Length: 390
Image (cartoon, helix red, strand yellow):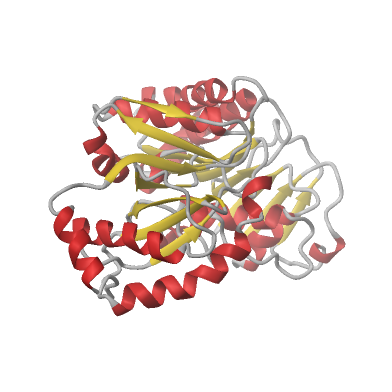
């Protein structure tokens, strides 16, 4: 007990966090760092970073280390594409003794608690890489003992809005300790969703769509935009992974694909399968959702989604952009411009969110939400023009 109080007095009024740690998919470190530095510069915080290839993480060092905590709150994960989760962490690099990792970790957490008060909880994690995955048993073994000690010394709170303590193991003897904020970060430790593939799902694409709905839509948006009575067009639907999820939500679906759908979907009265080309298909009337998972150049997909939005054929869209192996970040920025520029020029109010989901590979998943009243007015205006021309 005396140790905790001694360390607290020694570091009083000092911010122990000096850098940011960002989780990402192994192989996407360069893109994660480039985007994080760009966003940091946009809020007036310069810095440098390190990104080891296939490490599954990025470290970002602000020019002023005292700004790490601030940057950890203003650099919103929801506004980043490639980072799954982020935390502001301390500068400790001392190796952990294998005979007792608990004591030094508790010392570091005590300093953090003195800086911000009690934590809302504690997450333990490791990079999502081949080297990192072997650390999972260690994290499970330490989680309970660390929680118990933090609770005993008053460093845990029942307030869910307080900062969360985090420990990231880089090896069995190296770990970073830091803070994340529940309102700005992943819903799951390490940004890895805990989802289960639905029974009889035609493909694992169902997990991707479920994750997209959780990651890219708020709770109120899911309640308002997903459910019985909604209509959707699924371009490139075969074998039907996304279509099945939509049907299970109670939606009516037009699945557009020249290939066959899974036999498990054939008995649904709310499904219509059209063997047409997704780029040439036009809906008879506007739908609530356009979904598109066609294998095509990302720019063409961005143009397609933008065209549907401009025409008023959909009120929201969810789509995948298959990024090239080289210049992924540059291609993503180009697609964003291609998609949004015509909509902004037309005066359409919309929100575009892009994330590299856990269940994504080389692609990025996007959601475009159009203002409901604006989208309805646009569709009505387009319908009136078509009648006049007819």
